Length: 346
Image 1 (tube, rainbow, N blue to C red):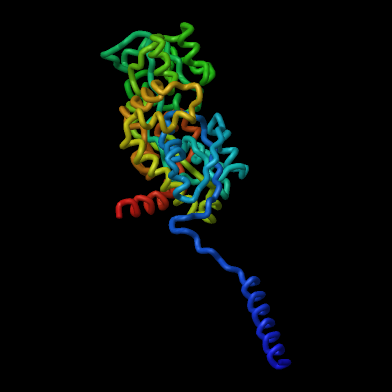
Image 2 (tube, rainbow, N blue to C red; image 1 turned 120 degrees about the horizontal axis):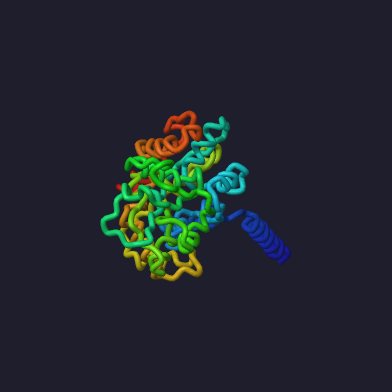
């Protein structure tokens, strides 16, 4: 009997020891198929605009989430302010005109930003007239007063580039007003200033809706294809986080594909929450205007000839803005776009 009790006690002790070992062992539950660790990415955009529909569509449609990213968007209200946010480390990705990347490169900064994807490929502003002009010609602006944009800004540089290409001397052939704040030009025109005004959407369409003006030309269509708004990050961040940059680029490409193949009405429904106070009909009209001039890039890939044209425009405006042209390979890294496109084609 004593032997039986002793044996039972031994078995009990072994069971307790085995249970302790099992409870102390770390058991990893394998992730479900398709699950990804979510990484938070902070992006600063130059402004909030329907012009950037593929970006917002990528958020709404869950393309960033599919890539394991949670995107937080803040608005800088100026390309220089967006660049400040990036260089200070407040955000990981900047989104504005790539001219800011060129300016910083020429300052000799060691850890300078590099463009890795583009979203739009045309200037997004339109020329609005007081009267409807079915046979509009740029040469017809001679002797007229035109309300332009901020001096040194890409919209104003693109406008002056188009005027010069049509043989118009901006100092002697017309009166070009550039001392009105960007957000006040539509109001100034409506109040009686100028014969024409260069406006971004939705301001141009809003004037048409009020019968206060008529869109007669696209500045972007006349200026040609450009890497007008791009995504960029510092060299160090891209080197340390290539998977994140590739995933981000893939989400953007999905947004581009969706916008370029989807009805304007459906796009408007997808992005309307980004524009509180703007009615759906206006968003649809704006998207239609941008699609008509092929403003949305088909892919995130940045073409060398387009970046060259951008620098042509800047230097024709003021050669001192780019005293030295940086090598394209230094300021643009297409490797992420190439990987995304290769995988999508397989």
